[in-house]
Length: 313
Ligand SMILES: [Zn+2]
Image (cartoon, rainbow, N blue to C red; front, side, top):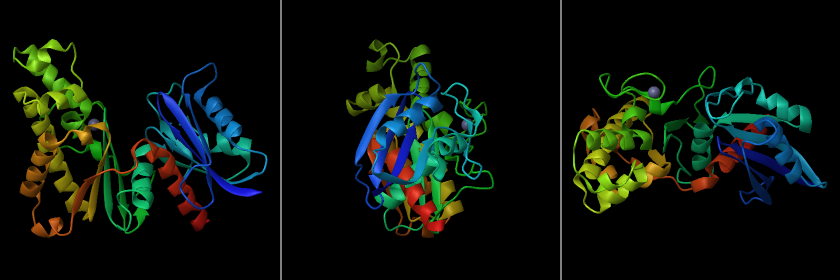
């Protein structure tokens, strides 16, 4: 028998699962399927896990990264807006009932923080802030070598901190959150608004420019695109200064597609971070860097959760 850990990364469009040896972070097997299908997402997830497990595997644990707010202590997905029916879903029990092994669950951004800490850019750090910046903004915090969960596992929603109460509406329905300024969606919306008000730009010819289009246009010197990224970067710097004040990390890791937007995004972020930190000590030995694990961060974050949980059990 071979001792293995199975992990899953559940997204709104795809579910990935992988089988890892007890030690090590190289998967033995892995597969990706679409989230939507004839059966519910939880049935498809269990079928995918069953398919990957071989007869001579001894499964020690299954760990899964879920999209949206998750209560890891109760094993509940509280709300996954992109998966129909996933509200207060007892996912840990659903998986555990079928496979009869310990099941660990976490919010995907929290687990990404754990994955980067254990296997990626954050190795060797004890205090870490992780942000994933794509269509939305998620976060995770490691404090003194522990993932910060809060009483219901809802801690570290770093995209939903207020950086300007008079700012635009956030996807969550509140005004002026970081996500409403610095996510890919927010950058695209800002440019769309400026174009609609008559601004000229190389982006005018693109029907609805994405954050990626805007980043490319900025690299080609387009003033509106540069302005949009600078604005997003400036607000990100304000938010990061706040995180430094609360958590005093030694590293801030930026993941997600927008974090590859380049100097037009990063330089204003670093500048505003410096301007908004209230004591220079927060910047001592501080590393601000991009994530290292790419698309595997969910699977590896869940693996890190399984390792940590098995050790604690
Ligand atoms: Zn919000």
